[in-house]
Image (cartoon, rainbow, N blue to C red; front, side, top):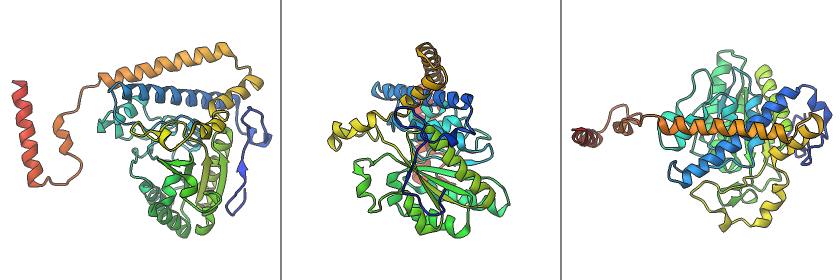
Length: 357
């Protein structure tokens, strides 16, 4: 891997499922690939159900991840057990790979803040909606780990739009200067809501921005889960052992609207989507598994039925959970509530008490 940023696209498996770099397969077992395939399919089914729930008024606004499952799951599986992960708002597959319960993410997007509680021992930060701010959190956690002499790595993940934020510059500059064990993953899905990536930057790639900060850079086919996993794992291993930060650009595509509050047809044509439909990350791995590991329609049918049942169970747990006390809307913002919010809180409690009589 080059020390400077890499403009070449790292790829192990082409869109037809053919292996173009066999060296990357040496450290990956068949069971690893089956787990990758399982998690990608689960993520897509979870996402499809969430979109359905949102359209039925059973969930709030959602950011769809369809098309980015390989980038998600690949980076999540590459993390070590003691590593930290700082997600943005489109990292469901990575969070599932780290053990986050799917029903909790349903709860989060359903407006229940209890769904944002980190799973004990997961070392996964809560979803971050504020674009790019969590890159600073990742740098801070990595700095703390280095001060304590811990041999762990930290990874953040965000979209291409985050590279236009000042937080991006500050986090990468700080990491480069202080030699922090952190990897900044950018899921370049080509759109920051309605702004195309070419309006985000004048540089040829996002990965080459690493040069300005004196850190390693890599550019990966983000729809090739084996390339994502193997490249991110190498960068995390180096960050962990040598305190060397990195920036990795995962080139993928957002197949749906930015969120359910968006209408991508207003700024994106069907012709723009067409080339990426043939690069689907799940189809790509299935083609490889069918050709090399005996995957067939019967196994596919059984897996989808199993995962669909798991998703439906998650929905039951999400919708069956007791609602939080309404007064919780006043918690976790101020150390001491201002007088006007104390009055509103008392008024709400009075209304709740009257309703229960």
